[in-house]
Image (cartoon, rainbow, N blue to C red; front, side):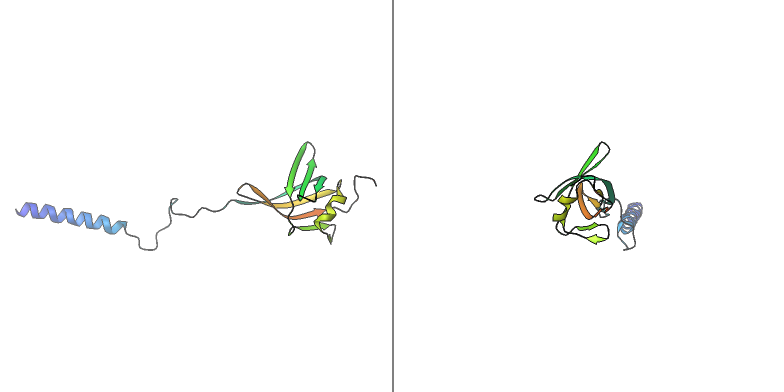
Length: 126
C-alpha cells in the first residue's frame, strides 16, 4: 500500500510540475501562432513618360520602354509640376512629360502618395 501511495505522489508531482511549467508568466515571447500579422506595406517609385491621364477616373498611365503602368490618382494625392503644386485636373495637359509617382503597395493595392511632373518641356508640341 505504501508503494501505491508513493507512486501516486510522484505522479501527482509530475502532473503539477508540467501544468506549472505551461502557465504563462507574462514574460514569454509570442510564438509564430500568436504574433500579430504585420500588414505588407512597401514604398515604391515609378518613373516614365505620362502617356495618358483620364480626369474622370483619375487614371494616370506611365510608359518606360515597353513597360506601361497605371495608377489611380486620388483627390488627396500631392501633385507637383516642378516646384509648383497643381490640381489633378491639370495633369491631362501634361501628357508627354516625365513623371515620378511615389506609392505604397498595401495588400496588393497601389496607393499613390505623390506625383512629380518634370517641368523640363513636353514631348507633345502644341
